[in-house]
Length: 473
Image 1 (cartoon, one colour):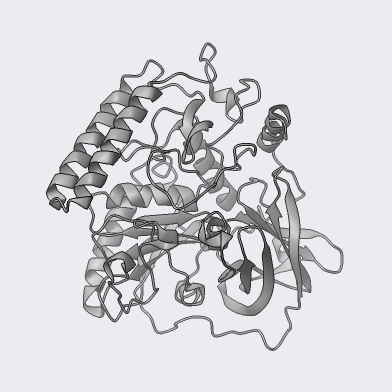
Image 2: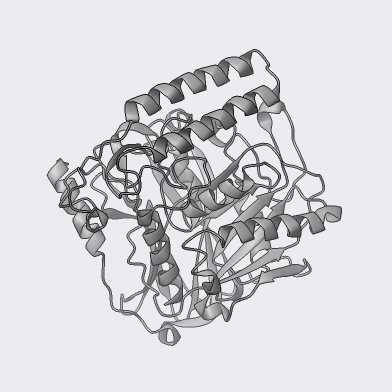
């Protein structure tokens, strides 16, 4: 695919996809259908198989914008009225399997993951399809299944009905608000008060950050108070294993700081205790870590000095579909962003044509594209820092010394970036998406780039704002 073709694709993406809005009451009941399936394969193959269907509680999702025109996500599921072929619901999403495919392990073995998609309960038979992106970034259908809402074997006990629920704040009716559920992992029965305090603190941080601050009244937030039998979560590199409710663990895909759970069934059963659209898992741990997968869930540790940063950053992934803009930290992926394919994430690009880059209307006249910044000096400093950190760890240096050089480096990054000539200007800055060259970000610094408490840049803020509109308009 040529650079010109890629840039044209970007232009079409920005223009967006349009579809007539189906009427909710014509096609759906206000309940939730959850389709579970098994997603299997290797780094180059994938297959799907039907698992189960659950009837969950009242539908908490949108009742007006039923068709997702954001063009975000590695995957897209669509629900069609089987009699007429009318598209009546769709959403883009990402999955653990989709990330796993980019790891070294995926080149060696076949693996399976439990996954779910959720949509309003249909009044009549539907055909559900799942599509994935090809190398040209087009969605190609790879699986479909027909579902009859009258099927007697569908499960209707998919929740823990006796687990307490604690609302953090309620802004309005679930039909036109965004409903977040916060789940605890590694909190014992005696630590539920701590869980509530941690959740309140992190939610306060999220809604002190724009554009969530301005959009706060569009959200409802609830906690489900399911305790774990033991405190903490698994940390395989330290041979630590815990009997925790959601089976969250450090070292996902071999990355020490990456926290995921593969126990999709339990996660869904707990979350279904309340009406929800977006899931956050708060992990009772101190060691740095977290994760965020678009339209799946956010994970964040509770007691690290960077917990506030992590929570907001990872929610940027899971809610806003934002990509990581940093590129100097170690990651588990071998080629997460092929450099001949335009990323679908709204804040990453390989396009350097100023007339076609996807955030072109936000670039001021006179700003060069690509936009220069002190990249060589930044890279040299980060290479030296990472080497120093690696040597200190190998020599079993005190944690205080490792923390000291980290804090020193963070301060240097903060000051260095703000002294660049195009600071405060939207542009096309090289270095993003775990790649030093060939991938570009829209701003010198952002919550998706550095670990400073910088806010979201204008492009990321716009993307988050569009997601808020998708769920509330």
